[in-house]
Length: 334
Image 1 (cartoon, rainbow, N blue to C red):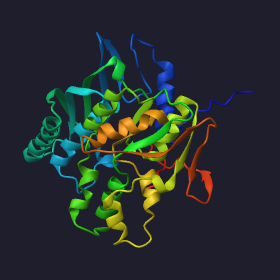
Image 2 (cartoon, rainbow, N blue to C red):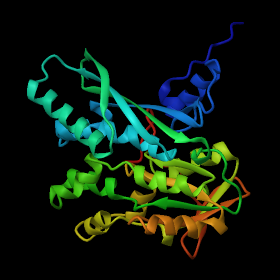
Image 3 (cartoon, rainbow, N blue to C red):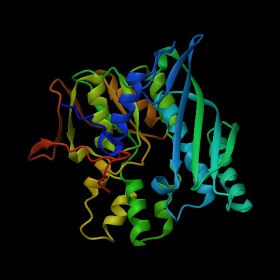
Image 4 (tube, rainbow, N blue to C red):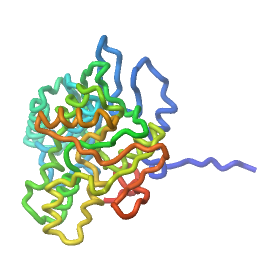
């Protein structure tokens, strides 16, 4: 009798399953924080050297409405978002452009201008990179940053009783997507989707308070991020639906599109690049006050619990929050 070898496809593993597989194979180097966090962190005197990389491709990340300038902005912004989630300050980025040979000179100029604009807006620069011929547009960025060791905000560390909170508002990227899809309102409504803002200021302010027990950026949706934190921390969460900060863009779109479920978009769509943090209850007001003084905000949306489940409470019924966020190689909710 022959044993049949079971070979899973990436469509069965999903992005996070594939990352776990890779992590189990790779040797452990001399690194303070490795695979599983927003950034790798290397000992760097009294600081950590932060390193992160992110890639986008034409099929999965680039709407046809996205300009070359916005494409350049986007790849820099999503890499800087990982630095922000650790409380870090960026040192610089390298970019690799994979472009079809039919790409025009003007496209390349605008792509580079967009990347440079985002980098300089957040006080950093593009310091190098690579370029190759590819069948479709594929762009990869790698960002470097630093953070004092005592200010580093890891993904692991949340404890039952902590408040779980988010910066800013949720659903603006989803509103931008549906606005592009249905051409409902002015194209400016889609700017948060195409030109996201990395929360570097918020990350630094939170890190300065030394009160955050865990932190990650919300790139794949709130529900997906909660499930990732749950797996790493062996805890649960109870989220109050009424406390979810819905973006003005999503509320504006709802007024024009009947039947739009704004909470479904805010919970699951992703692309907002806000920060998701846990903070001990007695330290939360101090953190909130620090952000308020600097014209930004953090909103408590629930509590970390002992039981390893994620519950959404709408004020009447408590039920399990579905994990419907974005994940490569799988069928997506949106």
